[in-house]
Length: 514
Image (tube, rainbow, N blue to C red; front, side, top):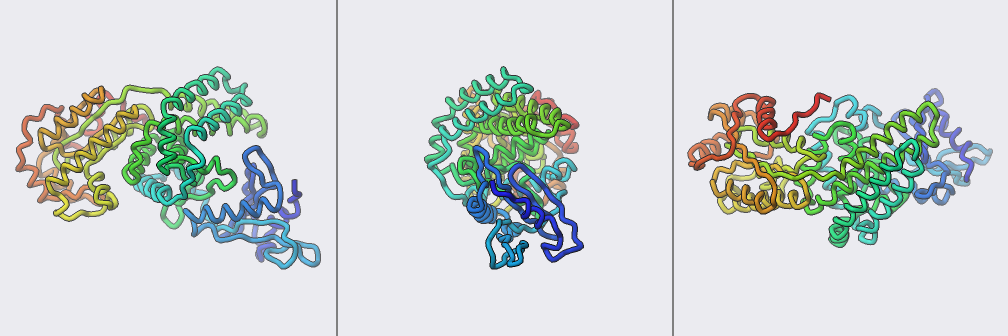
């Protein structure tokens, strides 16, 4: 391996950056070192070689520095500024970008606050629904434009990951339980057998792309007031060229593991609404489980190679991720819940809360008429549509899309929550018939509140997918909805009380205070 001690000493001195009085902070990982000085960060690839990564020579480090710069500029061009060479001076010392021999390469990046990493924001409870919706939009757009890589992924790609996970988890046993590791492999192979054809079909349809590859909360930051993905995988195409839902699954799993399953559900549904990827939902449990297994084996490595004082905590965390990986593969009977009522009854707030609580994680597919209407019009959910878009024919297309989304989720073994006004008896009959065809339990809920309450709520709406206003409400009030056989819910109270009533009506546990 190349000896980088001189380079590290150079990068550790403030004078090297023209700031002799400045202190230089270091962040060290198993494959890189980041030097923080002033408003900049300089990333050096360490001269290391693993089975999955090779930075051992200057030529390789240059190659992967260039790749890292190009790939991360897809999502974080404001952060990744450029490449710098460390060169030998005539007198024997080192300098940036000199005319002499190139000794090493570094990435120059714009520095951001550690507190603005999404994992830190999660710990500080600074994440918000609005931020998570924005993050999902950014990921969906990134995936839509990512390079297709059909030569990778699919059934064979995931089979190799499952086998590698098992081998590496076995190296961490003990302290990890070998019986649990073997159960995980058996369950993963069973799920792969059931979804292998789907994975191949998705690969053939262009769903395997050059993604981020390491999309967890610590590789997302709040930069210039927007979620920003950075530090993607550049060193191994097998890690980066994957199904887009497998890429998303790392983020979802990370949120679930941190007790933020409600945000995982929100991100998943927003991503599906923006990307139209509901056809891949049957593979999601295996994707989530595999991501948790990867995290368990990484922590298992720390148990063997880390400092003795941190080994016990790493062992506990590894065992927790292994248990999570198993639990994510457990099947539960799906169900279909429809939530109807006039505009302003709070259907969408209730539906979101309910979808997040329905097992298994990350909850149910939430199909909302207002959102699907915007997708059919090829606009963002919060964009306003003209009145001309609200025709009887348009309504039929929206309800057809609702049923299609719900059917896809149920066929994948996932529960579905459908949110629409359901003012016509045939619309209510159609959604109940959908549940019957799918062979799942159905619950219909009808939210109601006084007209003046509904009008006040509509007047106070901001940045919502619904275009309903007082005129729409007045039109709805004049419609004869027929006999309502669904369970009626008094929605005149606040959102928390209405959600509690709905959770009770559907037999869904309330969220824990943690």
